[in-house]
Amino acid sequence: MIDLLEFPALRMAWLNLRRNTLRTGLATLGIVIGVVAIAAIGITGTALQYGATQELGGLSNTVTVFPGEENADNVITDQQVDSIERVATGAVVAPQRSDTMEVASRSERRQVNVEAVSRPAALYDAAEGTIPSPMRSGVLLNADLADELGVELGQTVSVGGRSYRIIAILDEPGGFGQGVSVVIPLDDIDQDGYDQVTVVAEDGDAAQRLAEEIPAEVNQRDEVVDTFTPADIQESVSGFFATLNAALLGVGSISLVVAGVSILNVMLMSVIERQAEIGVFRAVGIRRREVMRMVVAEATLLGVVGGVLGVVLSLLIGYAVNGLLNGQPMLVFQPRNLEFLALGFGFAVLASTLSGVYPAWKASTANPVEVLRG
Amino acid sequence: MTDSPHDAAETESGATASPERAAGHVAELDGVTREYRSGGETIAALADVNFAVDPGEMVAVIGPSGSGKSTLLNVLGLLDVPTAGTVRLDGDDVTDYDDEARTMARRRTIGFVFQSFHLVPMLTAVENVLVPTMFVEGDQRPRARDLLERVGLGDRLDHRPDQLSGGQRQRVAIARALVNEPRLLLADEPTGNLDRDTGRNILDEFERISAEEEVGVVAVTHDELVTEFTDRTVELIDGVIQ
Ligand SMILES: Nc1ncnc2c1ncn2[C@@H]1O[C@H](COP(=O)(O)OP(=O)(O)OP(=O)(O)O)[C@@H](O)[C@H]1O
Ligand SMILES: [Mg+2]
Image 1 (cartoon, rainbow over the protein chains, first blue to last red):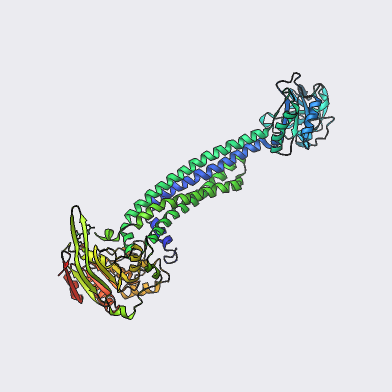
Image 2 (cartoon, rainbow over the protein chains, first blue to last red):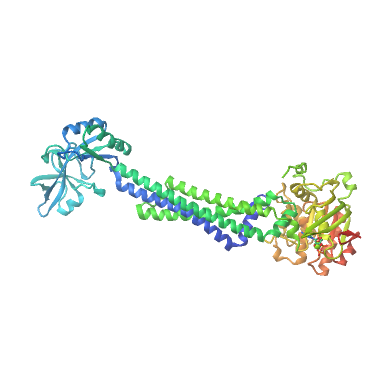
């Protein structure tokens, strides 16, 4: 298998590991657990974070502007919308009104929150039909509500007593309280000012910036508007997972250190058992550093074997977890996860190699005279 | 550890016998004393010993238990360092060699055979023979096979020690001691663990080696039998040569 003359240290290491398979197995198990602690937990964290991010979805680049605490009328005025538009250059600014109204089909009726928006195409996706921009007539219905009411695209429903044709069915999951059931043209809710303004920015960073800049511009004296952006949540979610990952990596590292200590122990025992043999090696002209090389190779080999097993096991676990949480098992091969795997493997090999150094030194100091007596 | 000039010869394999070396002693002890301090008292395992082996010579060292036979062998084999006196190997003063230099000198010029064989259990006969050359450049496999054939183990090349008898193990150990083409072969009780007939075979082997290969052989023994085979017998009593 491994040639004694080509790779003497490796050959001896391999044979010595096979000498006591139970002991080798237990030492390897420690390494495997350590690698799984780092890699599998890291991969699970990635999967959870991926799921949470998906949940927030496309909303993460929007900023919602709503009346602030010191806004006496509790509405956003046209003038303030102009200010917002000035700040949010290049972004879509969509003022909205909302009211609770009765929505009815021929057979069913529901009290629901109705949104009035001039440009809903920027905010919502259609599952069926198309959303015109601007929207001047018709109604958009959430798929669930359409089901409940027993209506389809192209049919009519009444909203607040007025009759509307359904021009699109919305593809909106409605998670995180952002769900929408009914959308009608902006002017169909008749009131002064707006209940809120949604700004669709280029990306999450732009959204977070606008969430700061808009109040700074509009709130000259009083806090008349306030903002909210899911990008903030996104960021805290990321922050949370970063912290969690750091903590788990800490746990994983500790378990690898523990595995390293057990390797140290195992190697020390086996080196002491083999003292006579090592004494013979020294007597027949094998140098201290060559003895050390053999023993360190043994420890490194333990780390490599444990590391490979740990990586394989982590991949299996990651495959299952990604399948269960996100329905996409192949997500386990994300670059980030490969980093976790490399980290786990590298640390395993490093920890075991370092653990071999002291036993190796101990072995190399075996005095042939002492061990050959008897 | 200091770098000694003797390290340079690492890749030099076997004995390159120069004429002056061939003429002189392979190994020589000059006024060697080896003391052990245990508790308050000092025991002289060797006391002012003068001793020399020539190439092709076979010497038996006898004496009662505790008389210093193993100590003599260890000092000759550069495993132990004398308290006083000079050790010469092939004419070189090696008394003050550091561990590294002594290891390299053992690798080049000395072969050991131990009473309890001390083979590596997981290695085959051939691999055991190759152990001293593991970390040395060059493939000594043909030589290892050849040596095993010469000690009558041509059909046991790939057997592991647990598949060999005591006498066969000792013959593997002898082949191992010879793989580096030593100038000095040291054996501590080589027949101690063998029955009489097997012991006789092993001693025959030593005799042949010393004669054919110009190797100096020193064999420590309790066994009167050994002296029948040797050119010379040295008796040690209480660390003093009689
Ligand atoms: N490490 C040591 N520490 C203290 N005393 C030692 C040590 N090694 C050897 N001695 C002493 O040196 C003396 C010579 O020992 P040595 O092993 O050379 O005897 P030996 O002739 O080989 O005996 P045996 O025939 O029993 O093997 C003994 O008295 C022994 O007790
Ligand atoms: Mg002895």
